[in-house]
Image 1: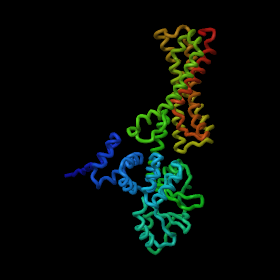
Image 2: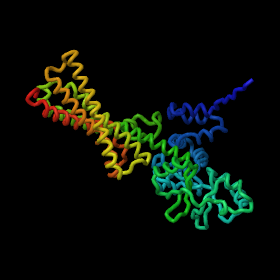
Image 3: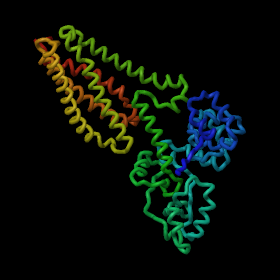
Image 4: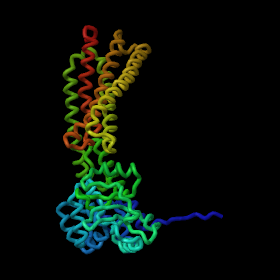
Length: 440
């Protein structure tokens, strides 16, 4: 008779599940109510933002205890999530070696290899025998975060090669590390961009990459887990920016209302001011609208189509840049592709718009005797607006990146607002050209 394996949730599992829904005042009390044997693992399971907020709410003696549970890279993440005024206070609670390693990590930007690396890794002498190497690795296990690979270093800590634990165990005890290590290996310099690191992991399926300085001295390793976490954080920020907001500093439910308003109000004000230009453009064409009211019926159709096409292009290009598929030098290739895509999509929407006008005229006589001219005006306008929207939406991330800004700042609402104004100009320019002397 088959048996079912049951896994009962611990108290800390249940608290972790509802942590984000608790008020800040409730979290410390809930944490203190945990069984002592579960508190350490619960603290280590929290994201760095939550760790920092919980730690700062605890008495100083407990802060020291929990801070010293963290590896240097995790401690650096916690420090970065803490208010600047409290960072020195937290650093002072660390032991000397962890403080030195954490300060070294904090000197790097978060989006470079040095900011992602773990400074504690398994190291070996190349001349050591296999038996000596395995014995030495056993001694290192409590002090390193991962032991997928061991790295052979010379006396000046320059990286010479790498050997996996599996290869060490399978090798003959009489051989040396130099005999079994691989000298052809993937490595990155400490200032390498995070996207390059992500690309190496995704392409080659490796578990860890060594980080070296300009002289080849090994500084640490980056694990697949760390890269996956960093990629998720960056993707979250990009999605929030593309939506027309500044990136939040923590989980949604843990972000205070004032902070939330600050993050969202800036872009909303900018977009509102941009939409005022749309109102200005509308007033400029007031006479045309009075003479041919039918033109006003298609304004929402035109500007939404342009905005949607631009938002599509922007989102695709931002993601391709984030994955390392596009560089600034690729702008011309992208422009050519998007012009062709814009013409094709504009022609498709223009055809649908033209047929809609013809069918409605046949059924309800909605658009008057010059409905064909109105239909062609809408069709050609859609062709122009969608092409412009697609091209501008795809080029804006390149322009921002060239200026040293985050391409994700080219939010979909911003592109839509930009295209709204130009869409009106294109629409009424074509209308003047085709309907002067008839409706205008």
